[in-house]
Image (cartoon, rainbow, N blue to C red; front, side, top):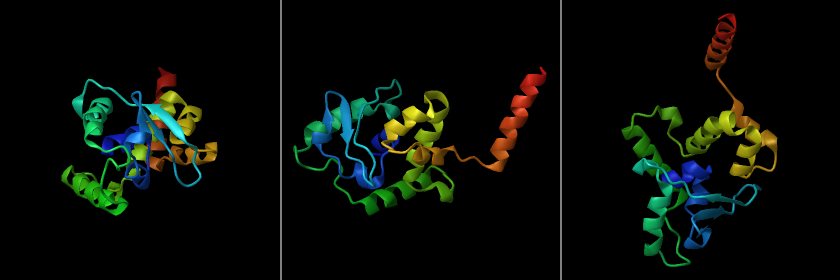
Length: 154
């Protein structure tokens, strides 16, 4: 559930609404909320078992009835689980919310995939919505600029 949320930048309410009908031919189709676009993505296969969404979903789907939600929990329970697991993992309190998964995949992908691809992946209609993920702290901005200037000097 958390892996699907991360790889596809889903909201808690979007992931808990998924049924087997959202999955076909190793892809996921998401009806996004808040006016975002419907998106279809390939499920992610990875050599690292903890990141191998394709394997996890493939093992989980056969146990679900066609119209049954995959994750039989509420959005609120999803939040409680995420907070509890985040605390156990030592994640700072201000980052113990499911939206941090969407934020993380967006921030990591913007620099390598480009903001226009991340916009489509997250289902944003407007590039300005995706641009919200470009926020950086003064500390990280200063470090990046100083590092870039030092590289120019060499």
